[in-house]
Amino acid sequence: MVAATQAAHESVAGLAADGPVRLVNAERARLMEQIERADRATAWWKQAAAALGRQVREQRVEADQQEAIVTAAEATAARVRKEVATPLIEQATADATARLAAQDRMWAASAAHGTARRIGRRRTARAVAGANEEHNTVETAGRARWHSLPETEAGVEAWATSMAHREADADPRVTTAQERAAEARQEQHQLTARQMQERADLRGQVFGDRKPSDPHAQAARWQERAETARRDLTAIEALPTVEAAQLIRTRAAQEQAAREAAEHALAERRARAAQLDFTPRTRGHGPTPPSRGLGL
Image 1 (spheres, rainbow, N blue to C red):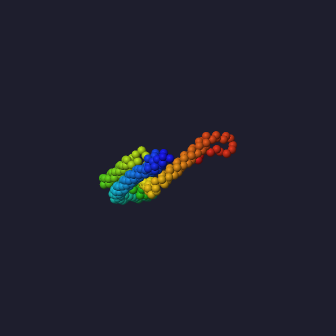
Image 2 (image 1 turned 30 degrees about the vertical axis):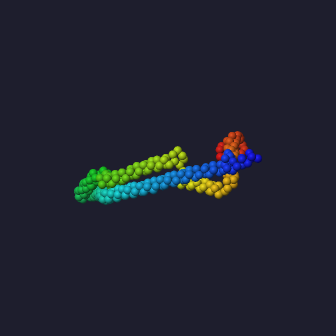
Image 3 (image 1 turned 120 degrees about the horizontal axis):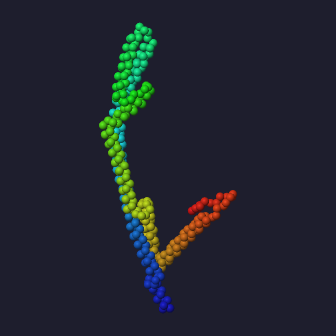
């Protein structure tokens, strides 16, 4: 009787190894440590989310500014090229049209000379010579200016545009504007590469060797863990010591049962997967066996 009474007092006082006071104190300490750890993790993930979000916003502003610079430079280059090419197109069109007109007059004079009577052949011969001289002069000037000329009226527009753009692309005003646009595009490529490296560096600092995830979701998970631990701690502290100890034992038993059920379900899935993987193939006619890995 004395020994039993002493053991009961020790258990109530928390002196026994499995006493309720010691069990409750240990659980309280564990929950407080869990709360502290979860609060630290929550704060860290919130800071990480803020840093990642701040980087995204800053990089977006920087990229938009550079995109505006590229757009403006390319628009300027296109405008300068058009301004330079427009009078060149008009000049090339005029030169090609003049050459074709002179060619028509030459052919007409030659045809008239061929059908002229003897009395008028001297006059038509002079007309042919004049038309030939005019055609040669116009053609020589045109080829010296453009290095080629269209053979038909239908090809004048495309030819004039091509020649004008070729000349415009060699104009210092156009080349300067195009070089500025190319420099702006190159700076944009460099900015993109730098921003990619900055994102990789920051994500490496945040996640390390872990698989990248959503920092907001991580912060929410850790915050939920802290709140759950606080609720458990509040529930324990609201009960008498013996009842709190019983609640702790009940929760521990439930968690153990849940772990065992999960392990059992995992073992069953692995067994089914192994059975499907090693199912012999059916030869000849008949139903097609399941493919490897089906149901994983």
